[in-house]
Image (cartoon, rainbow, N blue to C red; front, side, top):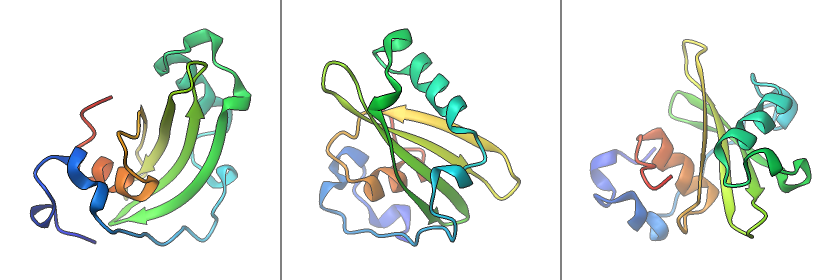
Length: 123
């Protein structure tokens, strides 16, 4: 895990940061603590497509263990062609949080690191 103070001040500048995370033992959408139907409902609420969102635009990417937080990640392609990352994070206490934002040029791993440090501000 890269300490926050060793990363550029602005997460938008993390495009050159080399980072990788282990996948969870159950590396699937089905292992997510939030059902995929709820993930898609969240996409409908938060994406630019809103109620016009199409389920076919949602694709599971991977899981990861980032520090003590577990992540499940999808990508969603909006009707405009804009790609978004959709995440579900689960903390050690079992609480979950959903997020959706444009990647801003970051890889899935860089994006999860930015989300872990609460640095996804461009959504």
